[in-house]
Image (cartoon, rainbow, N blue to C red; front, top):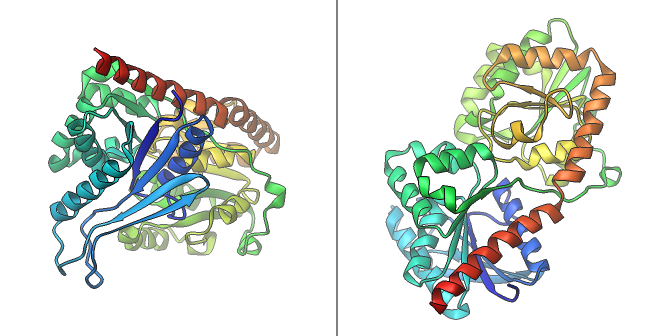
Length: 396
């Protein structure tokens, strides 16, 4: 089913920073390589304070053979109204469809993109796929305002994909019909040559055992349990907690207070948000990589750590707990447990041989089970199934 025109909708796309954007770019390229004409509509209609007044705009660029359309609703007021923005984004997306006549819509992260995309697809009798990435069903589903809309999106989709079995089970609890029209498969990652990466700027500040984590640190990342575990361990082990990334801005005072309360300030290196290549360059300075998330979809940061053959401690949640097998390619601990994290870090701190073995097994896992060719086959199957079914409905 090649040469079909598909429109992927997303809140971010490179050069925007964010895991969903990285995943959309990777998937768009996988689809392009099997013959689809891929368009990406990028929009973010969250209410925000307008910086001056401007007309609506759609700027289109060709990024590596993918048509990227960035939709911007007009700013006509200093107090923008959310539904005005979203209504205008819908209109812009509809104009885009009028121009290109898409055969399939595919929304990533269902809360905002999913509703606008699914509404348009249903009105135009075009098949629509929705892709659940993590926080959309782990967090936003608890908003009374969004719960009903999420259910409608899942119910109305022609197919729904999930990045973990945990997320798929929740989706099927909310909408039992998804048992017949959903699939779960992991993200993939391209191989990386770490020897080509430059020395990162803060490498000389890393002392003792380096315990690392990567991401935008916020509530779901389980950072408080990692901070508490390291605060206890620093009494007996010289260590540095290397946080590659930064705190979510609205939570920054909370995390800064936690670091003060635990007397961890002299044992932490926080890089701030850095380019992806710089972030990956820090991986080889980590003796232990930790991902203590409370929920997390299928984080790209985990796959990068596996590619770097790091010994990983992860929690038994979402794809982290599905990809990591305890004592084989990582250590797996329950979420929300300082004691379990501390014990796992201590185990790895005391055994360089175990660190080496787990790191090599992690590399082997990512090479054999998380390669782009596997993810490409999964997407090809979903797209082919949805488009074939759509054609048979039209024919009948």
